[in-house]
Image (cartoon, one colour):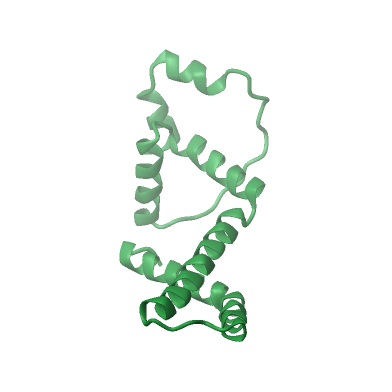
Length: 131
């Protein structure tokens, strides 16, 4: 279904809502996708009740405006997970961690968090079938 076909299915309320208050758009940003990718994009747009062009525009602008914030937050969350696992392991085993050992754990977490976060994201993408 292309944008014209999708627009035919919208009622007058949706058509007015989509266009009210926006400035005229004169530049096109496009990309080529496979039929399967197109179907995935259409499904994502439909899930949010939007036509593909509007949905894609919002997603692209959101990504451009927010930058790597999501990745940074995820990476820091993984750092907390690594830290908790290492510290709780010592506690569970009844060991008292020295200041030097704790500093070593912090250093390892700081140096390994990005690699671990990337590995975990790859695992999720592979599980979802998205490469």
